[in-house]
Amino acid sequence: MTEVDVPVPPLSAAQVFGPREDLARAYVGLLADTGISHGLIGPREVPRLWDRHVLNCAVIQELLPPNALCADIGSGAGLPGLALAIARPDITMHLVEPLQRRARWLDVAVAELGLSGVTVHCSRADALHGVLTVDVVTARAVAELATLGQWCLPLLPPGGRLLAIKGSKAEAELAEAWPALQRLGCQAGSVRECGGSIIDPPTRVVEVIAGSAPSSGKGRARPRSARTQQRKARAAAARRHRGGFSPTGADEASPSN
Image (cartoon, rainbow, N blue to C red; front, side):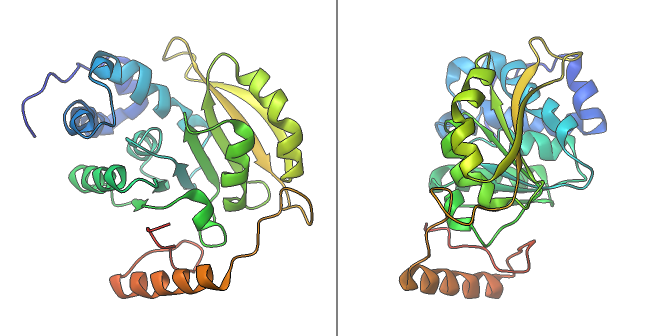
């Protein structure tokens, strides 16, 4: 890594990351260096990497059950996915990022940080429907809630949770999106605050609980075409050859989607 001005962690970093604070420091160093050169983080964000980005994301770990299987949608620079994987070594994290440039950066970051419980998918979330099933889906600054529901809820079993990091208008956004989320089979939704004793302001998270998939209506996923199924089968065969991992017992989807 080239020499860069890496911001000093606040005292709260030790509270959030505990014995893995050094890993968090290394991650912030990557964000301040190649994260900027790859266009993942703006140069003006460097002084705020800890408070506004890494800690803001990591504190939502309190909403993750032990040994959770998670997916971070539109992961970008690994926020919140990598921050959570560092803070919680017990979880398994799938970083889902459709842009190859960003996915390549995530692959390098995961390797340099030595995070064995993290898998990067260069894929759209909807390309993983029926392929990847997780306990929790996270998202930050990706899309409005109704759209997130379409992308993320098919990745969850009944009772699974979508955790969308939002700001001061979280309640209004949830209220506006709720009819669409209900059509997608959601059974409950609320706004949670995380890290109130650690960061100021606390992180505001919209938590949506998945129900059974709707049997009809707008929430139903479109049938896959024969061409799509063939493409996914070829990708699955390639991943089996490379030893790809899938928590559902099926192979992962093609990164070309």
